[in-house]
Length: 107
Image (cartoon, rainbow, N blue to C red; front, side, top):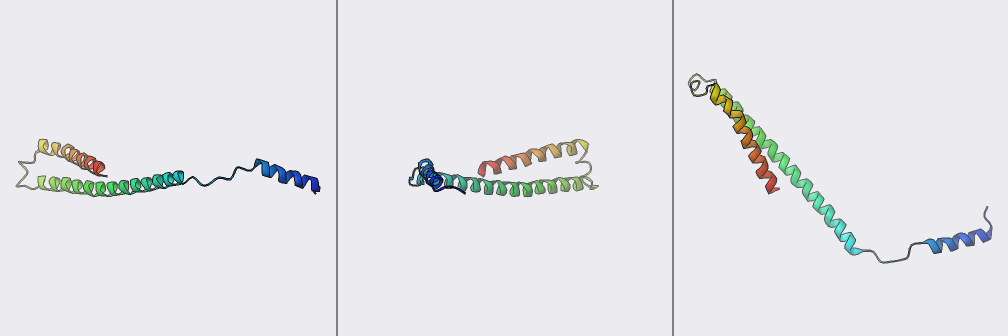
């Protein structure tokens, strides 16, 4: 149990050590809200980028599969020799990277 004198001392110390009353910092609150909004917009742009990049990667993969299937056709076999087929994957990779950089710049 505390004595009445201790309660008075506690109240006096609480009053002395309490932070001073001051109005809220509206500028700081606005800055924090803007930072949160900017972070949310950046997250949305990243999701849009990765979604579109995934679809473009699937399209390039489908194009690569189509080239592979066409190269096995007897009519196109002379045109799709090993040297031609060897160039297709790097060229499609360059196309995919170009799509990615264009999407990244737009985001």
